[in-house]
Length: 152
Length: 152
Image 1 (tube, helix red, strand yellow):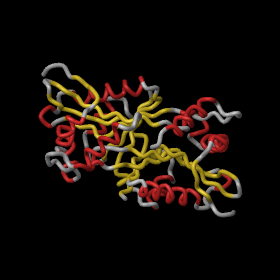
Image 2 (cartoon, rainbow over the protein chains, first blue to last red):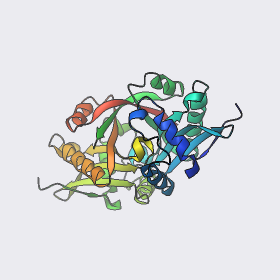
Image 3 (spheres, chains in turn green, orange):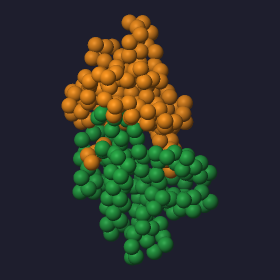
Image 4 (spheres, rainbow over the protein chains, first blue to last red):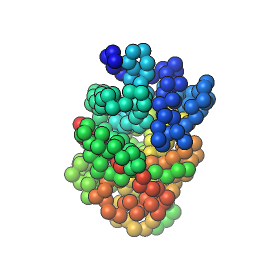
């Protein structure tokens, strides 16, 4: 594999990103992998693009998109006005798993949060993803919180 | 107590909000309760105000600010382009606890997320806050995720 490039996603990356979101134990029932992309994805991507505090990142190797994550930069009053970096939707293409790509993607994301002046990086991971907790612990994350969700 | 009003916070509310953030088991070591407010809070409040996807809310009764929370509206590709509402920094003044104010504040926040088209409301709560998990469960939240943090 050639060097990994991590860059801002463009509309042209949407099919590859959606394919990765759908190629996942939990994602397969939640996502719509049809092409051209469901307009809901196109609209959501436009909303991410329009928000200076959102950053959709893709990892590319050999001209192929093989990983993604979304970064959110959240201003807040707590902890003496600290910014938080938040990571959502981490995926690595099934063809490229267990090759350290997720680790590199996360290290890049942590660096971006530091560069943007965040005092904390946070994420939640579904308790049913058995290996994910250890993956994030290896990167320095600590599971000090309960991650609670309410479906509307 | 007169009727509870929940509204957008203004700069004039900052001292009351900071006092509530500081009057908390975890917050007391993290916050700066000095007056006038530490400029870091003023700067953070300006960043919240400048971001259309952030909403700092206060609950008021008898002309006094007695509760607060921050709402973040997060666009995303996951779950077929679903928006998420996120809740941070929930506080009720110690003089007004156990009177259902937190519950009302959260119900209002959930309604706001629905009104803004979110498909999910999420929050994390420190595992050391023993009663918080049940409080959120009573509102319908489920602790399906680990909430992981990395301090920078």
